[in-house]
Image 1: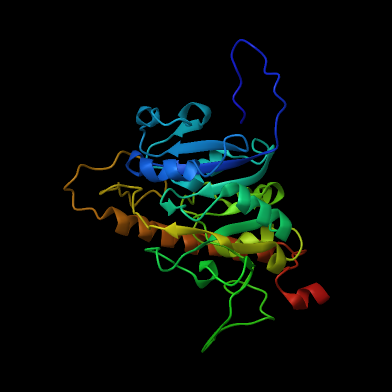
Image 2 (image 1 turned 90 degrees about the vertical axis):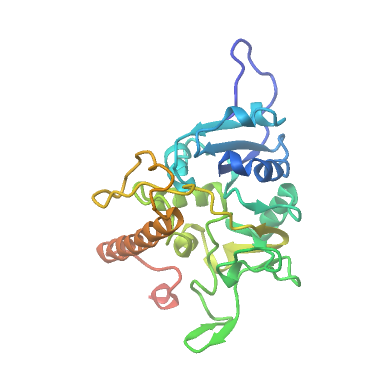
Amino acid sequence: MELKPLWRSSKKKALQKSLLAIAAGIQQKRGVDQIVRKFPVTNFTIMLFHYDGVVDRWSDLPWFGSAIHIVAINQTKWWFAKRFMHPDVVSAYEFIFVWDEDLGVDHFRADRYLEIVRKEGLQISQPALDPSLSSEVHHRITIRNKKTRVHRRIYMNRGREYCGNNSTQPPCTGWVEMMAPVFSRSAWRCAWHLIQNDLVHGWGMDMKLGYCAEGDPTRNVGVVDTQYLIHRGIPSLGGGVIPINKNSADDHTPPPAAGSGVDARKEIRRRAQAEMRLFKKRWTAAVKDDKCWIDPYDRRSRRQ
C-alpha cells in the first residue's frame, strides 16, 4: 500500500509498518482525525473507507495526502475490508487495525499499544473500553481492568453463565469484539477468509476470531487494559433512511428520500441479526462437512 512518486524512484528504505483502516463519514471527521493522529505516520499506513462519498472535505487535514482513500456509498467496514484488504495485498504490514470511526482515543497510543501486544504475544487483540465514559459496552470481555496490563478472560457465575480458570471458549476467553480489532499478519490471513462476501456487518465473526490465532487462543487473544478507548456508539452508517428490498440481501440502491418512514437503524440491526444467524448456520455446516476438524477450544478433542 506504499504510495510511490510518479517520476522518480524513492531511495528511502522501507520501514516495518502497520496498517490502520477505518470506515469513515464526513460527520465524524473530527473524531477520525483524533484517531489518526495517534498513529505515527512513520510507522503506519492510513486507509480511509469513505462510505458517504465525501473525500475532498478531508483535504485540509495534514495526513490527507499520505492516506489511501477508497469510496463506495453506504458500505460497511467489512464490505471494504473483504474487497480491498486481501491478505496478499496487506502482507507487508506487521499488524492490521480495522476500526470503527466512533472511538475516543484520549488514553491510547498506537506505538505503546504495539509494544504491549508484541511482548504479550497477542495475535488478535483490542484496546479495552472504559465503561464509565463509553455510551456502549456490549460484552464484559472488553471492559477495562484497572489492575492489569492485559486480560485474556473474564470471571462470572450467574446461573448457567459461568466463566472460570478452566473455561476455554467464548464468551469467557479467546475472542474480542469487532469495533476495534487488531490482527497480526498471520491472524488477518485467516480472519479475512472468515468475512463472507454477502454478509457485510460481520456479526457472529467475533466469537470465531480465536480460531485465527496460531497456538492456544486462550493465550494469544486478549484485551489491552493500559491502552484503552471510549466507545461513543454513534449510529452514523445509513443516515436516517435506508433502502429495503425484501427480495435481495444485496440491495445497494440509493436510499429513499427523507420522510419515507423507514427507520434506518432498526432495519440495519435487523439485517445484522439475520446475517449473524446465517453466519452461524454456515459455520455449523462447514464443521459438519469437515471430517478432519479438531476444535482447538475443545480440550476433549485435543486429547484424542
